[in-house]
Image (cartoon, rainbow, N blue to C red):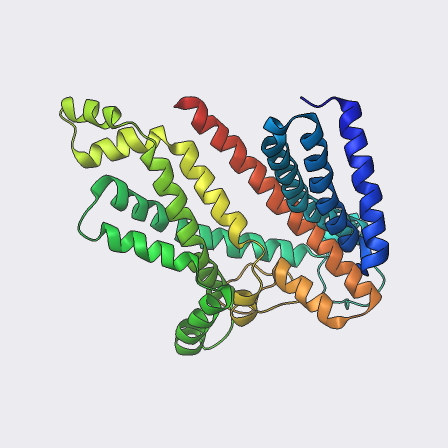
Amino acid sequence: MQTLRQRVVVFAIAAAIASILYAVTGLDGLLGWYVAFALSTVVAVAVQSFFTGRKSLSDRIASAVITIGFATVVIPWISLVFTVINRGWKAIYWGFFTHDMLVNSMDEPLNMGGISHAIVGTCVIVGVATLIAAPLGIIAAIYIVEINGRAARFVRFLTQAMSGVPSIVAGLFIYSTIVIAVTHKNNGIAGALSLAILMLPTVARTSEEVLKVVPREVRDSSYALGATQLRTTMRVVLPTVRSGLITATILGIARVAGETAPLLLTSQYALRLTTNMFDSTMASMPTYIFGALRTGTELSLARAWGAAMVLIALIVILSIIARLFGGRTKGRK
């Protein structure tokens, strides 16, 4: 077991070697220095382990590689969150959440206009998509796990294949089959349908895994009391994994809340707050951010960063809620 002093010495040596490599190899920027530091850390740990005890050489090298890999994953996320907050906080004020952009433009002062129409639009579109995808996904999972009929393999294969469908393909499908052929105009319901296609496989696959953890004895006990398969599923299995199914639904919502491409093709963008999904285009957080970026001015970019910060906060909150429900599910096993 390494002491704190030994670890400090190793990282100090690695930092010194990384600085030399950074200076003589032409590596550029923070990324270049980090790559040099990561390689130097592995070398320093290997050299130290070689002299202090060869038996622990592989373990210490593996620990160093795992630590560096963890840092490589975490650092970009921390950098992303910091960048969004640093650039977006100045656009945040109370009116940002209560005003729309009907009488304002993206390049006007930041104390004018807001994202209320985008927030409401996102809630409505994602809400309707959830009402469509969540029941279908749970039903698909029940068929695969509980019914296990002849088509179970095909349904599982279909949900797995749908997981890899690019979001723009889902948007293009709804655009060609609904917008062009049925409604003849862009609207919110088309956006909800496109998001439902993307949400369905996430809900189905997560629900399938949740249903698999129900012990076989629970079902057998219900059958022993004379319950039918339908009654067992509805009265015994589903209540047992209720929290897990809620988690699956929340994960599906988090999956599609930030999708932009399908909404650009279907619901597009509106400047005013509206809840009518059938009559006209409807704003959403992703399309608001896209429109602000297209404007390209300093003020519009600040609005885009502010909206991105709100969207990330929303997704983080949904993920935390999913974790809480997931913890409750594990606690009941």
